[in-house]
Image (cartoon, rainbow, N blue to C red; front, side, top):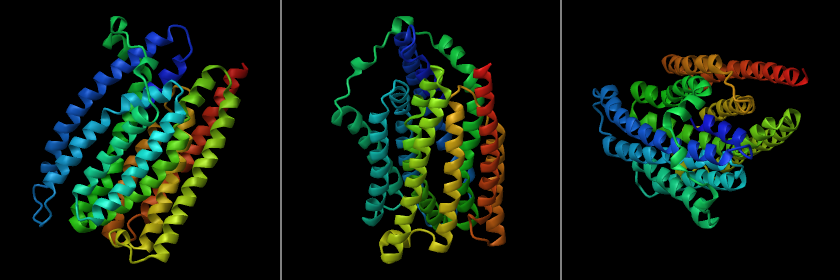
Amino acid sequence: MTGVLRQYYSHSYNQDNSQDKISNYFIFSVYWYFALSILFYILGTIIPFVMYNDYQGHMLWERPWFLLLAISCFSLMLLPLNAMLDGTQRQHLLIKANILNQLAVALSLWGFIYTGFGLYALGLSQLIGILSFLTTVFVLNKFSWRLIKLNYKVFNFKEVLIDLWPLLKKTSVVWFLGYFYWNGFNILSFKYLGAEMAGFIGLSVALMRAGQNIAISILNSQMTLYANTIAKGLVAESKKIFDKYFFLSFCLLLCGYAIFYMVQFLFPEFFLFKKILPINQMIFVSIFFIFTFLISGFEVFIRCFKVEKFIFTQLVNSLLTPLLFWTGIALNFKYFLLPILSVLLVTIMTVYISKKSYSGFINEKSN
């Protein structure tokens, strides 16, 4: 929904009746994510006990899980604000807030683990990230709600849903598949490798994904700028802007991973490095996330045309990657060796679809 809202915000921005449309989208998003957070909490309460009712280990995971679940629901309520800022071309504010959020999560996670908070560190670090985001938006930048005029008189939930539905029905499938894709590593490792190894894998994935999220946040923060430029008919100009930010984001990702391994090489006894996979395993994790960055990056630009072209690739990724991860566990391979093959295949497919779609848009514009 966030991706869909960003596109509709950006295509409506500075157009006729834009204020009423932006107001409708924002009010709708608040209702939507409030209902979603309640549903998410209910499912997050039931599913773990169904999945792990046979767990006999000593790990006390229930309370940390419910803390993480509650904070995750709170985090969902930030998405309306995130989409609105992005769609109304306040990317500088949003990128600052998102980068500080990711850094706050990573640093506080280290701190909480070091001070012995155990599994509670996951939820508490997410809370610190949320507070960092809100502080950046409302305090450091003196954000005023007068920048968006809410008009409840013209709001109709059903009408807004009908307006969003053509793109939403496709992106919902992608989101649904992606949810199980990202959580598959934790579920499978906990089930087949035990709680301790699942912790090592979970923290390793969290660190590498945090690096990817910081890099991709720079690219994504300009997503509505690409879309707004496209809406003005400047497709080639939008592509140039995207290419510039894609290059910067990718370089940042590679530099971040290089610094991580340099620090690990220089300070191998640092407490954090004793709680993640060994370096010969971490290399595969970082390669895996380099490919996921490429996939996400190419998808970003095509979605700025208010279309969803990647349902099939996401279906392949969501089914094949967890399957190969489980196969690697069964064959005692490096855990992320086989999943790299999956994301490599999906990267090739995504690049092909992106280039073909872009050529189609250019030809359509020429005609």
